Image (cartoon, one colour):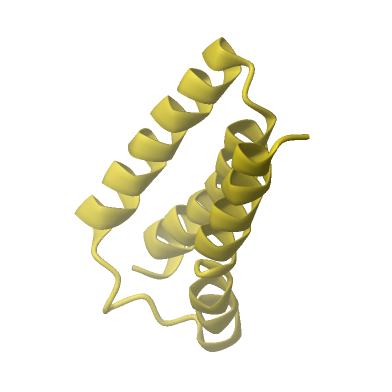
Length: 84
């Protein structure tokens, strides 16, 4: 693994983990009033596109980060739709 891959994994870990507190807070409070539905939809679409791009490039850090981000963002979106 080269230095740029390490950089990619670190960036992916940090940005993906930044979504975790929001998802956990929604799960514990069941309040999503302050979450924008448009933001949640746009982020899901954007991350799906980044994931597809990573797959096309066969870029493991990009694939891993966006796959985990998508799970968290889909959770947030589904909770927004449920508790909205």
